[in-house]
Length: 440
Ligand code: DOR
Image 1: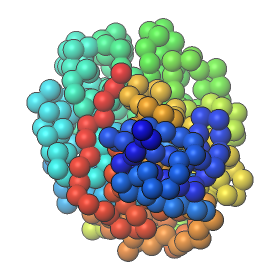
Image 2: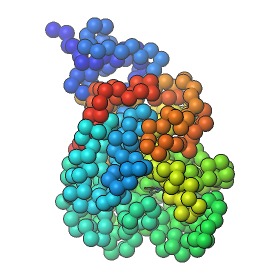
Image 3: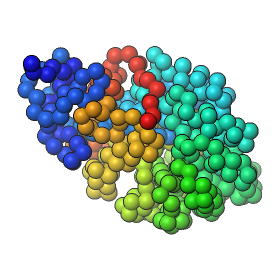
């Protein structure tokens, strides 16, 4: 008997484990059942995707979806809708919510809130504190947990660990990857006087300078090296950090964001004002160039958006009262595909940094490849589509993007999660049925 499939994708170019190939994909029960020639008529649903490229589902390993506690900015429904609209199939949400995700109850509450409301799959970081350090080894394996998060420098919210003994205790407790916001709290505090009484927002990278980042990254490299613990430095922004990370231990992974690869001071602050304000800051072009050089030389492990929405009203407060953070989950794929088309990275680099590496680094089950036996999570793109990013297209509750007005080449056309199409041509499809990500 000939195999039949729930869904057959015909005619696309597919990014397989061997690179790009013109093959059909047969999907059954949410998994990839066959890659190869599949004759028409064997699928309950069939799509002909001539001219499109099927990539393994993009995983955004750093978003702030604000639920519970700040739903005026975003919640799990609107944040995951933005993800689906932007071609992202799974997200890892940060613990600086209210209450913070620092207890099993808070984690279970977030997992439950996703049910029937999330458009894509989801997992949550467990926030580390001096108080919960000893319990993390036990709690890090709770359902829906992707790893541990430490804020070494304070940003939005109340989570902060900069005491050395507490950091050491956290690194000793458990095995999962520890993602770190690396800015030095002491330096941030001592330099805050530069902006405290009001200043142009272009002073943001002067206050939170390169040295604040390098001090913390040096400390993190040392912790990772001595402990052997899997760690992850989030949103690296400076040449100095990349210089230090050239000799990083294997167990330390490195993230950059699309916005730090794309925007630069002073232009970003001139054009966008506080909409360009985030932690760590957008810096000048020398630093942006250093991020690209590090990406090319293989130091960078993944791209995360650090999607951190705030309302326009909140952002309109005078600096430094204006909160730090910008949305990014929905613009991640188009902005990076535009860089691919401009020749700044290869499509294979994009796949590695957006899908296969995140899946491997965090131990996600059956994700990160278009291969038989893997989940049918697809980011299906039109590499040649020219589009202008607009605020109207943004599904995030904040309703704005720092990339409004930017023309890009390359656009996500279909998002499929577990064999279900959740977005097609800028429209959400069906109902939100995202599930907690499972880990090996
Ligand atoms: O700019 C930022 N905003 N950086 C962070 O680390 C936190 C984030 C937020 O939650 O708003």
